[in-house]
Each structure stands twice: as structure tokens, then as C-alpha cells.
Image (cartoon, rainbow, N blue to C red):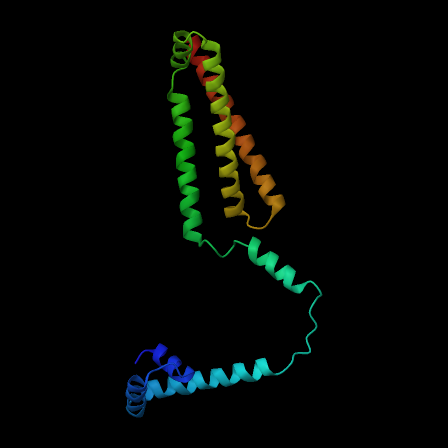
Length: 185
């Protein structure tokens, strides 16, 4: 018999037929009888605990603090595998975005701007969209890295964000130097 039948039996929720079947089964099965005794003991312990008043003093705003903590604490919502998968996806998307930015020739941007009557406007929109998407992506990546590597530490997350910014600055300088040397050759 499933444990839920034993719990329903103790709560008086079983109909007469199932109740009599369970009682017959309990006479023959030692494991289910032991489970019935264990659940009765648990119920007795809970009853005695809740019936006695506690002398433990609680802070005046205890309910508000617990409710606020329950609403804001998301640490147990996702397990480590999901965080690792999100980090890998973000890293893959960042690599793909940087590869596309490096691969996309600058002539293509200028050609699009020259074809349109207001070419400078198209170019500014392209630059603005690129900068906006890069900042949004970096924000997401830094939050994932900060929460994944240093959960709960604002200082460590800030240091990780600064290191990420430094790496991106050095990376962009390397790309710029590469393109300058390529133009000279």
C-alpha cells in the first residue's frame, strides 16, 4: 500500500472499503505497520509541539522580515546545473557576437550608409544599436558571472565586473591594433 493511503487513513479520509482493505493489509505487512506507527508518532509529536506555547521571544517585525526575505531570496530557485548552462549560453552568445562584429567588414556598414539618402542617420542608428546591445549583453554576462562566481558578495561582483570591463578594453585594443597592422601591410 502506498504511504499516502496510510496518511489518509490516519486523517480519516478513506472510504469504508479501502479502509478495511488497508486494515487487513496492515495485519499482514510489517513494513506498512511500522510506517503507520511512525506516522502516528509524527502526528503526536506535532500535536504536542503546537499545543504548547513557546517562550521564545520574536522580534516585533518578524513576519515582515520573513515575508520580505521569502519574496527576494531566489538562491534556491535554480540549481547549479541551470546556472552553469546559463553561463555557457551567455559565453557562447558573447563569442558569437564578437565574432560577427569582427567578421563583418566595415565596408559593408559604409555601403549601407551610402545607398540610403540619409546615410549618416543609418550609420548612427547602427552604431547606437550595436552599443546598446553590447551594453545590455555585458550587463547580463556580468550578472551571471557575478552571481555564479561570487554569490551574495557585492564587492566581489563589482571586482568581477571591473575585470570583465578591463578584459573587454584590452580585447578591443588588440582588435584595433590587428586591423591597423593589416592596413599597413
